[in-house]
Each structure stands twice: as structure tokens, then as C-alpha cells.
Image (tube, rainbow, N blue to C red; front, side):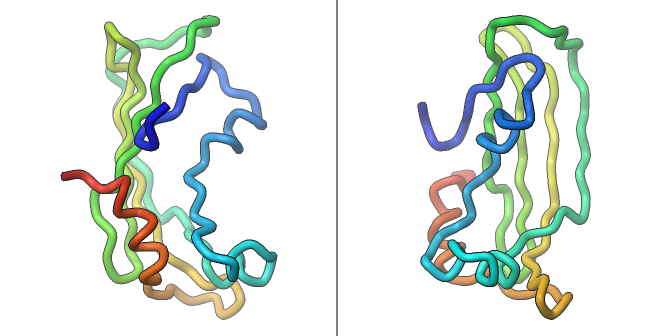
Length: 122
């Protein structure tokens, strides 16, 4: 499975949803609770455009995720939910790099930029 997409069934469970999150733990500092709080991302805007109905089914669909923009404190992600025949939804999420300890936005670190580079549009 490529890094730019993950498989999801028609109705994800909580564990499937957790497994589908982008793993932004890019260095040892973010593997403990204090590090995660200092290197968090919060959603500031999310837009979903529904293109076709997707009823519950056993067959999985593809969720393609890519980085649209990443600079300063801003991270923009784009998504497509599709199978071989249909595009069901497109979405964008604007996120802010955030330090939960100080309650303030922070700059995206070089380690995070390096990690996200493989998800960036060409």
C-alpha cells in the first residue's frame, strides 16, 4: 500500500479511524505526552464536497491523502474517497501547528517538513 493512500471500509470503526490518522510523530521528542502536546496540530477548517452516495458495503474504498501546502504554522491536506469506478467525496482540511502547553500556534519544524515532503503534491 502506498503512503499517499490508505484503505477504509464503508463505515469505519473507532479503531479504523485511529489507524488512518497521519502519523506526525517524526522524532523522539513527540513520542511522549509532553512532546505530543508541544507538537500538536489542530483543525481550523474542514470542507467536504460529496460527489456520489456511498452506502455501507463490505468492499473497501480508497482514501487518498496528500499535502497541498505546508509553511509557517499552516498545513493543508486534501483527500479523495473513491473506488475504481466512482469518486464519492473530496475534502480539504486546514490545520495549524499548535503548542497545547502554551496555547499558541507554532512554526512547523524542519523534521515535520521533511516527513510531510513525501506526501506533498508534485
